[in-house]
Length: 206
Ligand SMILES: [Zn+2]
Image 1 (spheres, helix red, strand yellow):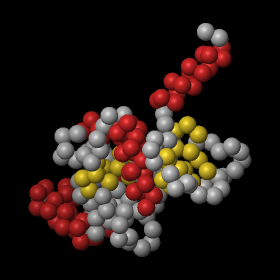
Image 2 (spheres, protein in one colour):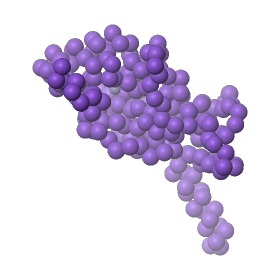
Image 3 (cartoon, rainbow, N blue to C red):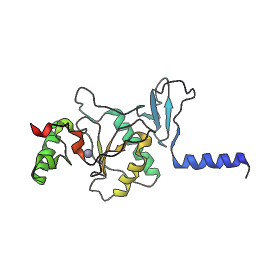
Image 4 (spheres, rainbow, N blue to C red):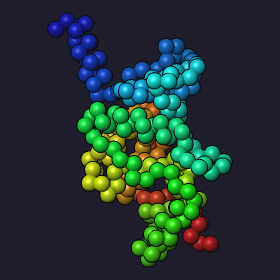
């Protein structure tokens, strides 16, 4: 094997492993303004000017943070990350089902109350269901994938690969819960033990 064919073999192997092929724009000095995922292949490319094409989903270039106002639906770039990861998972042989996404504040309050009944205390309940103002579901920035669907291995696939589209598993005790914690192609932060870490210190003393 010549060095050139070896190089081609390495590149081919790398492209099979990762659909994120071109995360550096043509001119490395230009600031990345968006990451675009192909709607057919889920391959991601960075852009430093203009906008994603109609055949692509705009994923955003960095972590998606909550806005000042509560939305009435999932954040559009979060929805796009979900569409892209679902396409990629399907081509890897995994079926993803969103079992919960955007929740109204009243929905979150209902689930929190139910959890308090189930677990016997607000603090224990909050390990699994956050009080409305701390949850990312009413912010349109959280999705639950394949919870109670018997498809845990597919959620595991997202845990291992979701970072390519900017989705991270956040908690040790919830294999199904994902948030847009990084820009596409960036490494996810370390996991937190449970949702209690989303609640500020002193909250339970009130
Ligand atoms: Zn969740």
